[in-house]
Length: 115
Image (cartoon, rainbow, N blue to C red; front, side, top):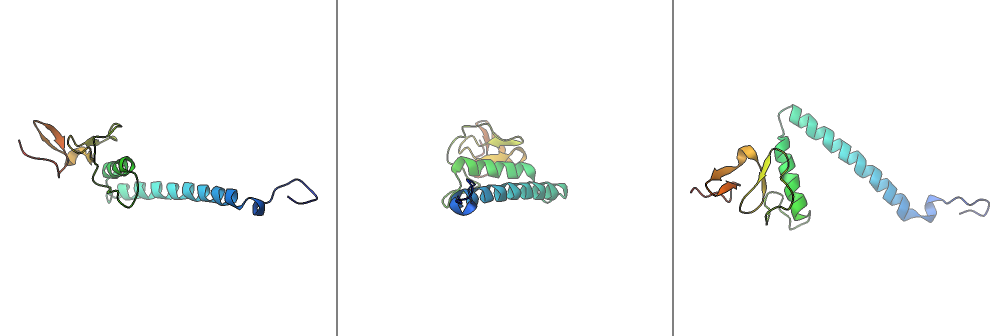
């Protein structure tokens, strides 16, 4: 604040200014990624269902150094994203067309055992 008026300057609250800037950057990056995914899907270079499955797996595990985006460790608590199924053994989300089925349920490639 200056002595002449009661307005606050960004120098007085650098953390809040940085937070606002980061939020704007995250929004812009989110839009960019969304457009790039749509563009790649339109060109047949990306499978949107596979992307949804991998993102759901990453959310379930938490994003971190030890998280593996393709493998889950437990049965999911939320429903599978559209076009995907949750493996009956490990809970990993996989695209329906990539799931294996036997008398015991539907499985990911790594958990499937022929009955």
